[in-house]
Image (cartoon, rainbow, N blue to C red; front, top):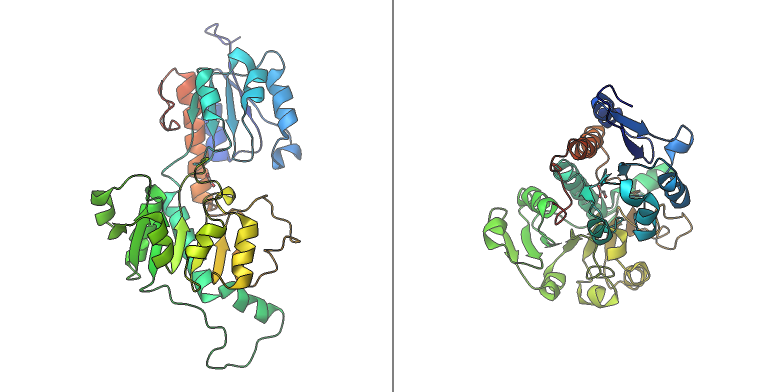
Length: 338
Ligand SMILES: O=CC(=O)O
């Protein structure tokens, strides 16, 4: 019991959490933070363990989770009525059943904005790496099979002056488009809504999705994962893309049908792909996509800079603190503000 007599608020943090965020939780009076000990804290908490911990008396008022944690109705039921808020240290919240949380009166927070520029930088990096075959170049040097210079040795494709199709002109889409202006690219976008004024500031032109596929040299999905976008990039979409086109996916793996992508990459229906996200994650090295030279795969690291992850941790912690104080979450999941 705290000095003022109030029961401390119990917060379950499901795995190790940057000190930048931990210190904010620690400084908040009357908060009791529960976090697994190492080595367990170094990995995602298994779903069953999280469910068991949440259901144990005296329960938890807040859950601070990560994109590796599945938050579904059975888990929320196990947590019971003591749970008041969930804060995820990620911008994406497709791992949380937001409707189920709303039905139970929970507030929910995520970490937008602070990763926009970091992720946009990375998307440019993936685009250049894939178009210019940088990983293939690194590999021949490491494997000691650096071929003699020849006019077409290691040739890739230009990013400058390319036509780039961005599917989803949200915060990250805008930041990517802004960077691509510096490469003199023609920028097309498709989205559920037209946003001509906003798009004009980054020189982006609205086109229908099929048009975007047919005209783009580089296709970048930057839409959230929803039932409508699951498998959006399948055989049909690849069939509409140019044979010289490149797909860069740094959003969610489920947006791409990986079997269809493999077929498109091996049949020459598209030229290459760069993936920061896959299904599953981690993707085993035995996966057929890993063996393809024209598929650049990295381990979900677009927001992985120390500064960005620390900022995300601070926001995730501040969302918990706001809920504890009975304030509006500074970064509520859209549509969840009470
Ligand atoms: O993928 C990363 C995030 O959602 O933060």
